[in-house]
Length: 324
Image 1: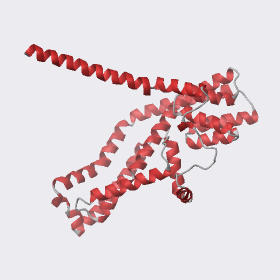
Image 2: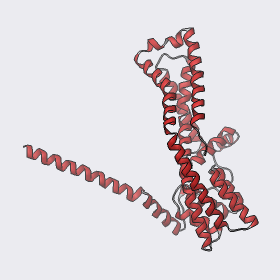
Image 3: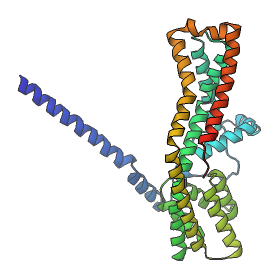
């Protein structure tokens, strides 16, 4: 009986391991980087591109599928800022969907805060924190995407320089870079190439790419290309020098990030500690902490503590934010 049980356990373990490996191989074969690169090349060779890589011929982006809502949102300046954030983060959601998600999160936070005996300002702050969750996620996606593009810029500059030395025109180089490089930078070059095909001047197409990717290094690269088109010069050599500068700056930024890691972690812990402690005390002993909003002195102390926390978080952010 023991031998049968041990044999069954061994075979079950082997079956689970093989199942996990089969799922991993299937995922890498259908959704991995190599599979996506092959799929993109097949689409380009067949004369088509992905639906998500298509741009509209119209200069104005749609904020909603409904015509009336789209016109209303275009008259709202905040909607344009939200759309810029979504474009820079690489999100496929429209402004309408983003605003609806923010409203839903706000109502969810308001409903959750109603379960505890909290004062109205604290409930509103809790609901606003939940409502700001989509903005935080979009800003985080934007930061991660910009970091990834910044890491790809030296390779793109070297690639463009080698293609120019081989005798290709800059317009053809945009198409080659959009085909050969990996995402997300290749998609931006494909959009610039499509804008040029639609009749947009090259300078405007490059400026549009700089607006979609607010990176100083990319602006240097674009300015070098535009100046070379006006005054002439060896663009391949200029791009090679820009690639060396970007690599050196990224190396220095990595060293600074390593040296400031302890300070950034301390800032996160110190910033989150008051809220975590208040939440735990509210759950474990609500009568004890309720004096902060039931007693007038406690309310004053709560406002003073909130102001000091905000000041401390801003001060810590200023200390750990080192610009390279």
